[in-house]
Amino acid sequence: MLHIVNKSPAERNTLESCLRVAAPGGAILLIEDAVYAATRGNAAEAQLRDALSRFKVYALAPDLDARGMGDRIMEGVATVDYGGFVDLVTEHKNCQSWL
Amino acid sequence: MSEGTVKKFMFVNRKAPYGTVYALEALEVVLITAAFDQDVSLVFMDDGVFQLKKGQQTKGIENKNFSPTYRALDGYDIEKLYVEEEALAARGLTEEDLLVDVTVMSRAELGKLMDEMDVVLSF
Amino acid sequence: MSSIEVNGKSYETDEEGYLVNLAEWNEEVGNYLAQTESVELTDSHWEVINFLRDYYNEFQIAPAVRVLTKAIGKKLGPEKGTSQYLYDLFPYGPAKQACKIAGLPKPTGCV
Image (spheres, chains in turn brown, purple, yellow):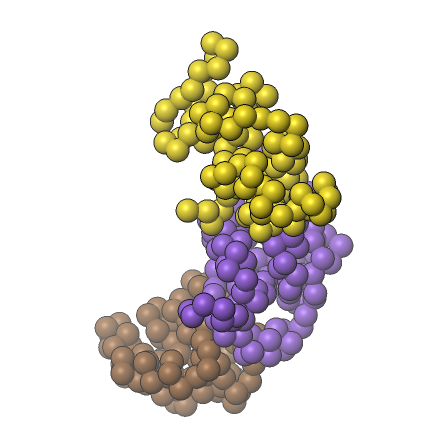
């Protein structure tokens, strides 16, 4: 299953809830303000690093770039463009856009 | 959706009632989905568990008290209500505090169930 | 916002003729609304109308037709729990027409 998160971890607990509940083996795609979670030195870094052992984690490159964070992506998180976003959706049986 | 196809729908409720309109909107979508004879599951996690708290009295805030409507779900053949165990505990609630019968689940069980769905909608 | 007048008292309705404040409803208003729908109310009609009002008081929604049919069958007997029976009483749809006469809002999901 693909889980899509779009909220900053500093503002909402969405990412935390997603990581808590999502079944291991799934994929997490961070978009919009959620890309901050995948950047070095942010408060949720440890949490996300821990999740890398259970999930494949992706961040949307255009959203990182738009926020000037393209060079701060933490190790282990893959970046995708919009085409990659679509691929992820089609590769998975189902997906959830967390609110 | 082609006619006669039954899909597994899951509605994930993560917001408290009244503070935002999400809980009420979710409930309306659930009732509409039920009219199309789909396989519907409801999940209550995070502050969403507050939606099911017994004894809601909304007169003072001049909002419609929609909590009795959760009791109507059974009549709509929506019987799969799941509540995250940890979310209840974190809010000082137990199953006794809830106004409908639910299945209390661990986060791991919930995640597994989510994976089995055709459509998951988040509120 | 429109309104209807029954026995010299004015009641607010929405653009489709549904009563805005269901607490204002009484049997005379029900009779008036039935007239506007060209439905002549019999005891059988009242049975359904009263059922709907009880249902609304308990659950705070107007039931979908399928749910209403099933619940009526349970409460008033299987011979009444059919859509045929309910459509005979309320030709334009039990949920739509009966709800309006009972002073309830339009059922959720009813277009």
